[in-house]
Length: 173
Image: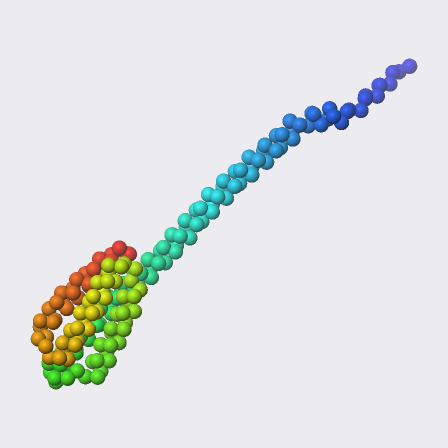
């Protein structure tokens, strides 16, 4: 008679649970490591993306400031040219034409708008000082004061401001 294999006793649930603990611990540790790595990687990617966005924003601000400085250079040139025109009219006819007066006022407004958009405080203050000198010069032209006495410091201020704007432009190139 052949012996039949004896039935093996059914494994005890407790012993099965104890045998599975190392695998469970390994899965939990592996999951925790994966989670930590994901958090670290995501944090680095977020910081890099934030830095890239900030660099892009700064580049846009610099582009705007560079454009403002170029526009300021042009507005300064036009404004001084219009003052010269007003001075020529005053010398030639004794009066300032309405057209010259209108162009001077438009040039002053363009200049003021550009000055208000300047980022550099010292340059903005220097430009405002120049504008005030121009106002005083225009009044003296109308009052027939010694024009050269008024014009020399005005041209010195213009040259200084023009050079300062040029230096500021170089920072953005």
